[in-house]
Image 1: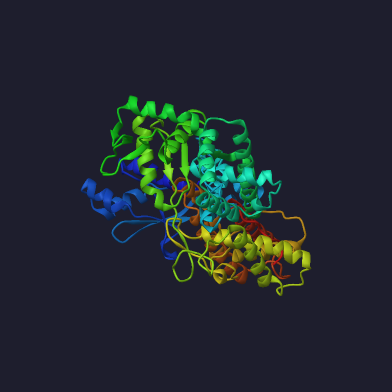
Image 2 (image 1 turned 30 degrees about the vertical axis):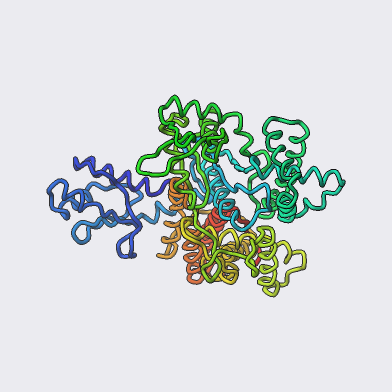
Length: 565
């Protein structure tokens, strides 16, 4: 149920009855309890436009706002409309949610095909912490879009074409001749060995350059070695994705080579559009309000990243029939994507009604505010970071309850990986992100552990009750009313996140929900013997809906819950 949409509809009816046509109707959460549950503060602008007194306009509208969901309408100040939601109506809605699947959240009527391009690991190296944000932000958005009923196509754009691959394939052949593949177990070391060979051995360097041509011309032997290297590289990525519980598979990989045959057609389309110009022998597109052009083909005939990105957009537009294409790539690529998107639209490579988005994000930093590195200044492998998260989580929980060793191991994996993901996703994606082990593995504050603890507490209540739940929700206190308002707002929150691509909004909502539930838990006895049965059932139902909401929110973020903590 789109809760705020229902309230906005009531306001629209009131405006229609009053013969007033505002530019935009939307209510906001009331800033204080005495202001009700929601507040409409757009009267000033409407009255000014009409030349009317704001308070008189507000009073006119208030007289025309009716409905079972509204218990009281108040006009405050110069023209603020305070809206109070009826308890009986709220109770009925929460009861419906309790009885429903998927929290009574409706699938979008206007379903879209959404392509999400994320993760993008290097084939020459193992995944490092720089790949973390793209991977988990992209996956959380994919989970959300799928939950709302859209067709989601995950795409992992990997670089597998170019000069460095001639070097790597040439070295792979030498390794193969020696019948030893040990070097490939460490991709970082393999790359260093190949680069050293390339720098020190002129014959090897020439052979590597020849391999580039052979690979691109379809030489069977070279392509066989190239595919071997790509498969081994992807297997390292799969290990990380499995630990992170990420939805990407090898079938989602779309390497640069996939678009290679499409590049000449892209150049022709740019030529036919009239956008292409020659500058110093290179084919370029000059962009509005930008001095540097977008180079799509070098003077020697070689293609660049922009060429491949345009081909990918063309493929996603023509073949995948995408309505929306999201590129989850760090903010440093903003200018590049702005140029590519403009060119794709102006040239007709992409339909004008398709939505192209750069889902930009900031850099992961250490506590000192510097880019996250190892102690010796090296790149932190992502697999090592995740393993450390599990170890630290084990230390956090091992003394909390009478867990067996197997339970500690299982919980540590869920909690450790969840902590890494939640800590990242709780930050506005466009901001730089301070990585802090102590903060992310805390039971206090906006952390996954706090959410998991709230969920586990509710499961403990349900386990103790261990009976059939019947009856309906009856909201008998202000805290229960507030809790119900929050639960009904969940669908609005998800819709906003889907539109703005801001997963941190889920974490803010979950934290507020869990915090209010903890207050409710402290103020409202549930299983005590002196609690009337109807009240007991109501509070159990309300708690159950809270637990399901927390679980669904964490599930969208790619984080598991635990029943005991």
